[in-house]
Length: 369
Ligand code: AGP
Image (cartoon, rainbow, N blue to C red):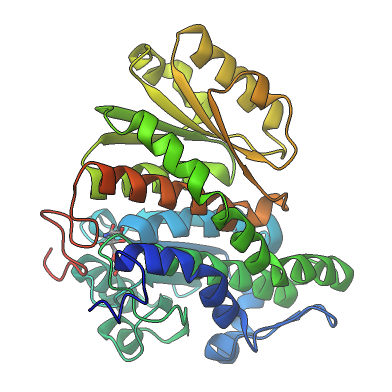
């Protein structure tokens, strides 16, 4: 087992560190930055259909559902197709309106999640075209879907999903660009620009990983908290949700992810000197707004941990701890901003003596409903 962990103390840590490689593997042969082209062999027989779809429904559970929320942001932004993201377990027990013109994207690391499988079966009966995004070749979900794209992240052993999440987000990014290409909602020059940046995201993830020692220090400061809030806006909101899920799964600290602007509609009541609040406060379209949310937390003596863009000076004046990540287009922010949050929950869990790779009550794939 020591050998399998490749010198790391836990599979989760190994998998966190594998992300520059796993994302590269996920993009290999699929992006052509110089030509401004995306090729997705797995769904190419549906290339024509994609020109005329009215709506996309994404179904998934847990972390995969968070990836779906990033997908919604990207597909709506670039391909201009309306997207709904549904918990598979809720979707399957409603009477959802689905037509033959709908495309359903099912996301699952394991490809064995019972609720996601049931949602696929229901959508299929109602005539939708089903695409899968899966990490395990030949699993049940890829066999149920009409077409799909594998994430190629390699086996994920840690129960808490890390590299599979960023690979799912990468595939969704490629799908959004592919759909935009088919629909003509993006120019080739814009695609050249975006794909060139995407191609360098693994290097930026590598840089984000280099904050590990600092993150460990921050973990030390907040490890005894009983609650933690994660806030973000735009594509930073799903990152906040995923940060909170990771922390509760492996450290058993109660954590919630919220859109930063919703804080004033309720969660602000929780804030006191005992409450750490993790902000995704990178320099993008909502930067100024997030700064005022940070001020609101500081005014109530909350402890602020901020994920900021390298070289930031504004947030540094207010936050208790700042963790820098390289600058990136908002579309790619989730791929980078997730990394420090994975490391933060990892270190907190280790310091609390928790079983990081196999947290209590959880299974790697949930094959029961
Ligand atoms: C992730 O850290 C969780 N263990 C869990 O939420 C997981 O993402 C969920 O059960 C879905 O699994 P799947 O991707 O294999 O379908």
